[in-house]
Length: 506
Image (cartoon, rainbow, N blue to C red; front, side, top):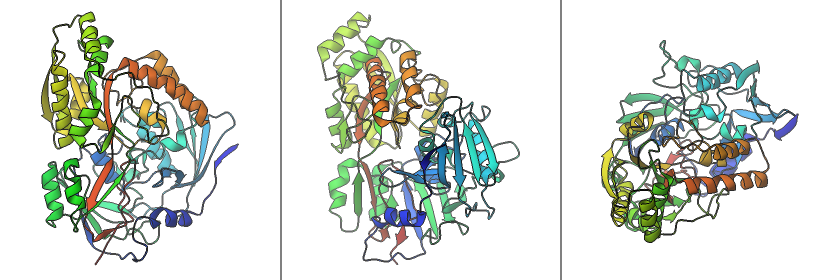
């Protein structure tokens, strides 16, 4: 068998990981409750049903995965100590840690991994994350601490997929209700969900059975969403909360100058975009989509919407990503845009509705700029803000013209290209389908060599950008802020919120 990961001294790795998270001249202390402000509410806490980043950020502290991306985005062992791929490339074998307990005090074994991952790919559950393993894969508990996953085709990136986010995390079967639903997941993570008040408040308490000795430092985390940027920032500066998930970019300099606020930034593995409904006219016409792409001034959008704390992009990857491709054909060209519209039969323009998410003020600003820019070529765009839950429902039913949002937490090329763009995938809400593109991104998951994969995804990227099912706008920086009494938090490129290393100065 081909060895792809060795057993590591996890304790040594953890020292390296968290060492940069707080001042070296201060010793962490245990205790206290961190009051955290989210940007929006969570739609469900079932990891196999959830799709929102708000839910994933909660689950980051409750559930864990077989593999894990450290703060530098290196893949390391986590619930699995090591893994290996068979010579035919079809079977991955994961060797589990022997000292992991669920928060209810029961040991985690291969049977639990088997149950979790089989529920993930169960067609009746219809998880949007099932693709990471493959709906036709076979998961088997070989013995108490060994799990084998056999795929229908070689999948060179399965270890990366199993650490991508907590939607593929391991949970106890006891989490499931009699009707098959999950209200509160039971995980192996550093915290336990102890209180839930709809989508307005969650309390996490320290997991007394956590396998990693000494963590977490906090007794509890109280999470409350503040959709309005100004209200969220006022809650921080006024002492109502200790930590906020993001700030308004226009307030960056002001908050950086405040001695009672700590602001940290990181390049972000994400892209902001708007997707159009390819099942509706006129968006089923590629010339119309390209006309919109030519009419957009991304630099102006970046400047006005996110105050230049971002990078204009024409595809799903930014220059900081190892999967960045320089192909950028859509420099603003209004003559080209008008010509394409006329050729498609829309020389007099048309009207459509753009749905945006309430609480994301930079998105509202971006929409206003786009509204003005498209007006220059005769297109009338109505901006219609909706709650995140309504947007998610519209994505599922296809009842929309266009939706503006972000795609976050990207660690591998498959996250950029397969998950949101491959035919039939749950997150491909635009209805995009191109057999040539599909074949390329499918082959990209079967190869482990980076140079070979890069060449494949470069071709896929050009097809995608030319087809323009999405209008990519910018990749913004990750920005978070907290009170000076908060220590140990690391701002990560994948936007993950991990509180297990955080401690409060007493």
